Image (cartoon, rainbow, N blue to C red; front, side, top):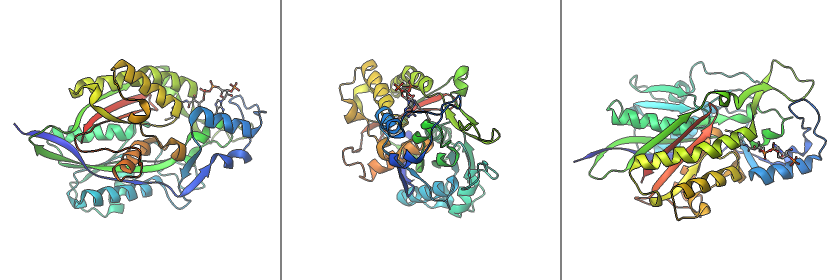
Length: 358
Ligand SMILES: CC(C)(COP(=O)(O)OP(=O)(O)OC[C@H]1O[C@@H](n2cnc3c(N)ncnc32)[C@H](O)[C@@H]1OP(=O)(O)O)[C@@H](O)C(=O)NCCC(=O)NCCS
């Protein structure tokens, strides 16, 4: 019997060119949520931040670029890598959270959708190529992969382009210490239907959504600066609550995905997890490893890019994946038949995990 597999045939990413080190925040004045000034020396705040999150620097886009521009660059690279004719793509699924925000403004622009813009940038004329956006917090790109798999398995699509792109630097509150987490970036993959003897590609998925008080763990709110305009809002988060939420729920979703995949947990060779906090990710994977009695170590399983790239939201996992495939993470390799997991958590609150066989 032949299997209908959903297989990643090309990867691409765009790492923005503006390198912003933690040092650059020494000029900032940070405030608490209640608008009182943080009196701790800024150097100490930054050292603490590095200690908690692992982040040393992040990338921001140059002033001339928006999310759809960098998404299109990553997409073009993935299409070239797959060696396919862009006119044969059935679906363009673009995960993002804030649309295009032009430099110097703080207004989201999603008219037309980023997927339509990217289709335009790629010069695709085929009216049967359907572009649409997916808003699912940081797990948006993984959810796009799950959707592409469903379209392929149901016979509605044969070739999908799944992109994750965000420019969080355009809506950070520079007076909030948590702003140091956020970064920009874009990644993309081409996923194709392949009829094959052996089962491979996307083996399974799991997703969770919690929308009681969790719905507002990430939200838009006014700047913490006392004299700021209350009508201008920035990305805000309940960091500690997210941390605790993620630690409880993400390992469980990962376990469900492995069970659904019908593979032995020990067969997993790499876990590419969304990165907002290095220690949080280590704790999540440690719990998962313990739950599933996996014998590999966390550093061996989990490639990280957070120290240099920060949290680029939906861009993080596809960028990391592209870097590994292209040999840009020398300590981590993905070979034929390896079983990889993608896992993510973010605004919604949403969680998801995919098990993928190379
Ligand atoms: C935001 C976050 C860095 C705060 O760290 P934390 O350890 O939970 O922080 P707490 O509020 O418990 O405070 C602990 C200490 O860190 C300090 N601190 C808190 N946030 C800080 C920040 N952003 N930078 C520097 N120091 C910070 C506090 O002042 C406190 O200092 P003290 O020990 O001297 O009193 C962390 O909770 C986090 O990364 N959460 C997850 C974020 C996430 O996944 N977001 C998803 C985005 S998609």
